[in-house]
Length: 444
Image (cartoon, rainbow, N blue to C red; front, side, top):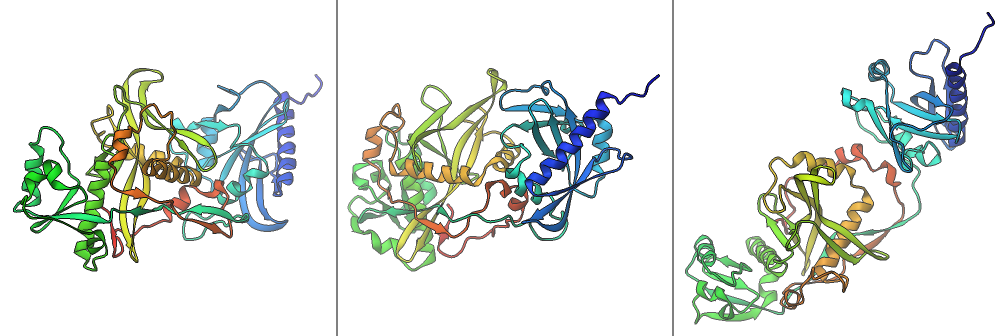
């Protein structure tokens, strides 16, 4: 019988040669291994402008002549790795990537095999846009070579400058504020206001025997909390620019209460996590917000419903866009610092038990541009820069009585930009924010 080269061996050789050439196109070296290899076809070396770096990546190539991958669509597909390969790769002291090559359309896709810990993770999900093996993948590939122990990060080639938005929105406060005498403590005042049947409002702050509010207390149910013959108007600056830290803290509390009242039909307050979140739509749950983005009109699903089964079944959970407010005075100007986040409920109203896994998973998916877009969205909401066709999202009568006005957030021009692909989990872990605020910053 004549000797014969099997199709699988021939395709394996074609795949390795094609991968070798593709890595050279990217600018990396690629050295194939001997015929004794058992799951690693070659080693790719990261090159920086044709200079070797001694940063290595183990590469396993899987080649096919034609056909479709499992679950393949125009944008994605899945690939299941063999159990024996799975066990072999987990023991590697180098980062391992899987490269898929299809001869019929000459396509290359890749996926990192880091952090494979269980049977379920043997199914890899490929994105046909993000996971293409070409020059756009250089920074992500190089980032894999950073040592897992110790300090240091791969620094990609930095691009030209970019415009950055600062998440600080300047406040425009009324010229005058009302100060009234009261004999009630904060707890007793809250208890009395809770008994009011109509027109409850909590946009006030008690400082010992004084109640502060931007609205005339004699024209609202707040009149029942104060001595009606001891109400006066003073300049807002007298309290806003006070040097005492405890006075600044209480004034920041007044700002938070006033903000909550101004947006009472749109935003709820989560006292446990200290964040504002979008309320569900009247008569429903899901909600959209249409606004003018950085360059064009856009919209966001600010309240999203997730069901136990896709498109059917009971609600699993509801995700609300939210932000943590922090009021800070710099010089004589008060700012609202916006930290975008998410709030989870079981039905749009009741807080979800144990939401931390959902929150951390969503935060890992957020990119620099995602957070930037959320800051812009919150500024548009607070400043009233929404579409005219928002379907009643912002009722005109609510907008008229808003006390606090908001200016534009500052922009700065950065001399360099960091590629979006290298903003990832490793960079997130390096951040260790202080647990305490600096003096003059109030997170209420």
